[in-house]
Amino acid sequence: MVTGAGSGIGSAVAARLLERGDEVWLLARDAARAKELAARHEGARTLVGDLAEPARLSWALGHQAPPDRLDSLLHIAGTVELGLVGDLTPKIWQETLAVNLLGPAELTRLLLPQLRLSRGHVVFVNSTSGLAVSAEWSAYGASKSGLRALADALRAEEHPAGVRVTSVYPSRTATPMQRKVHQQEGKPYDPARWIAPESVAATVLAALDLPRDAELTDVTVRPGR
Image (tube, rainbow, N blue to C red; front, side, top):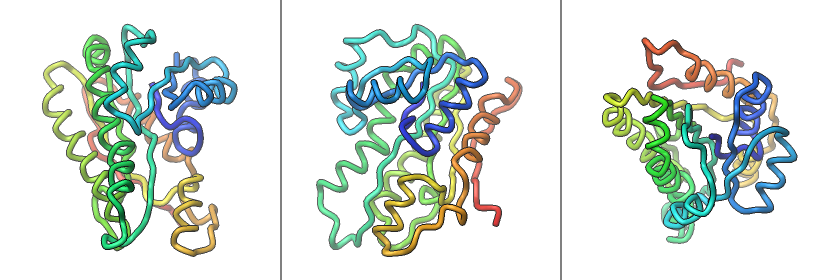
């Protein structure tokens, strides 16, 4: 199951999985988005659940039919709003933490039975902001630091059940989110300067395909030029 498949890294991961014949489920925030994702990623199945409303995810999935077994859960969706600590409102903090941290935590909780059954794999596509935070990145960085803690705790808890957990920390990647960041920073955006989404997707698949005798726990991806 993939979140964030509408663009960027999530879209690249979904495309790679479908190309190789995997059964792919995509989480969409609403029915209209689910229709768009199904058209974009032919052959994928969709579920509707809004990460921005974590408390409603249980209700949403309970009225649908998620898969009985799940080999992997790939958390790739995210949101970002830059700003000084003195300027960020509670609404921005709440929205950022919901999509980037609370939603993934709740979705993982709800799907753990299927993951345990398959001795599956949870991948959190985090950010280098989850490792070190710069000025004006406080809300995003806090959400990503929390996501790192979530992954570390989940790994320790679910190791006996055979569930693997990987955190991937990409640096700036050429995605629509990065274009938005550059607009907020007031800088020109040149995608050629940054990591291609397909390169991060290749990293995610490498973690998934690692033989069962090993677990890739943390990997940082930085621009090679």
